[in-house]
Image (tube, rainbow over all chains, first blue to last red; front, side):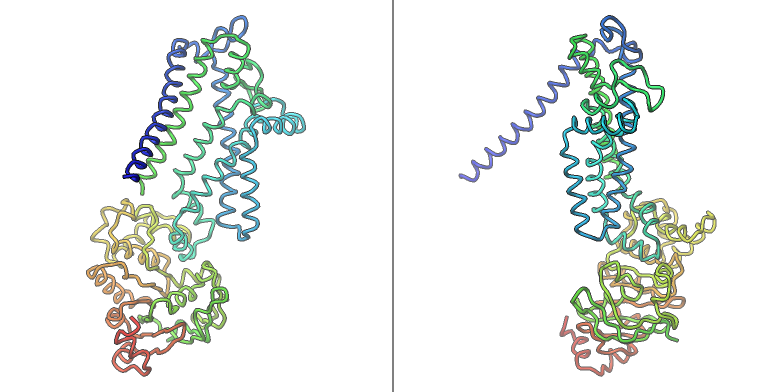
Length: 278
Length: 247
């Protein structure tokens, strides 16, 4: 009887927790949707900010482009390093000590607050390397931020590949590199791409690293990777922080959320496709 | 003619010695069965022959000659190509049947489509899968039945044109009919290949092999023609094992 009671209490508890989270998420989304949908139109999406103070009219096109470009650079930079690190740890590193050390470093990296990463990017990339506030500085800083995230997931995926299948490949006299590129990557591609897209979503929503390394208020669409950019989270920060236009701020928030939603849906579809393949 | 000569082989994993001072010769184009209770070192013996042992963290002393030359003097890739191995658990790559069979040939530089198609067709015929699946070459290999998967894996090992085929309990997960299919196929293959098969199944060893080696606790107890081992064993331990005492 007591056990039964515990069981029902527990069930109610998890039911309530799940519903609470669900309600909060839906509430935020609906709230932003209702307040922001009105300001979304062709002009808002495809033109630059205008008006006095600037941003009170016009659109957010430069911020959308800037955010997407920052995300692409961050993903490219982080995924190359993260995948290489994961391959090294899983297939080449034989020393447990080295493995533990690298894992420790990656864990520490994932714990660094994003504003500190921003300061790091500012000091190293913007000042010392002379990239200035630019797409490249911001992209790399965001890349450093999402690196641990991609690395951990890719490493997990690689570890989960059936050892017997890999051994069968070696047994054919095939080299390790060929096995990696022709067997292991094709087997893991959906997981890897899904990890990168999710990390991209994480990067696109971050404001702190971008403020110090890439963003200049109301910068136009960048001409090169060394141009400053505008990013959606920063745009949002300016619109609300300076009290420029609450209505445009809701619109911007909605666009940002929709982009994230699309990224997440892509990731879910990729995961689903992978399961279908098995 | 002996294609493999094993002299005073000792194999160990760390401090645990698995094979003790084992010497035997493997005759070309014959089927040699290796029998013995679980954990006696049969599989270890197989993985030592093409140096897969190194991937599992084992080491060996003694001498193994492949066609009269020490196996360590060959490039490891070449050796593994010449001495193919198929494991107990079938391990098709999660790609199409076609890709499974062209994976290794492509690595060895065969790019021509017609040549690849020819290889796939020949292999499927050799392992008796041609009639069953030649229309479904793009099907995922993991969707094949257990017996078909194992035959595909044997086929995949044949795509690199080995001289010796090592089989580690190839039928242990299969039913009678599939086992019979594979046995028939092995008899056919032994015309062109030297086959060493580790098996738990004594009647299987009796049915298909020319020679039988009995291993107990890492020692070679008896090695002779299959007929002699089963009908007239010289060692009491062999006799007891065959009667089913060690199980």
